[in-house]
Image (cartoon, rainbow, N blue to C red):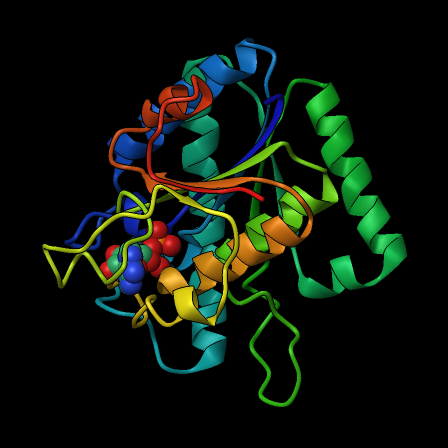
Length: 258
Ligand code: ADP
């Protein structure tokens, strides 16, 4: 695998008390920098703008109105990039920011522009850090104008840049036959060759306190990946060095492959 998209969820970037998990950002920066030095092309899709924004603005929870959420995302996105830039710079790694909206990938011209930006950043040895542009892109009721979750966004980024692998880092070790947070006897799927209604039915609920998509959006992302004959691994973020193991071919988490 040479070209790898790594997606990290809010639940892994924030601590349970709502503060930013600086240690996680530092360790992620270290591991991704090492991979980059091994001639891998790395793209990071990072959630967390709202979570970091809430922390920065001292708000206990996500505000109700959409404009307020946009404001939180605006503050949080800037702060999130500030953190990444600082932690990556400790390892001498330069990062760039790419903020996506759904319309960018829907129009061939803007889609090509996005592709060019990724290609150029990768050529320069820079790690692009991607998020949805939540300050300006909001959920519509009648038609879809937003990815809505970074799980599907990461699958689309993997598609645009023809990535060899999408690694999704979450707060669970993989996809189980039932929610492992509620059922200690849940059994992990090691490999899945397709995602059908049967699998979708096993992805219950909306996920953790901070996460937005839960398992359902991860399965939808996997479906998109499989449709494009690409590969995805879902595993736990707790220790980012797990990325070394995944790339060494160790059987970790849930592998989605045709
Ligand atoms: P992230 O912030 O990493 O995107 P989410 O909180 O959105 O994470 O989604 C992960 C959550 O999905 C887990 O914490 C778990 O509670 C929930 N979940 C629901 N069904 C399943 C399942 N079948 N297997 C694994 N996790 C599941």
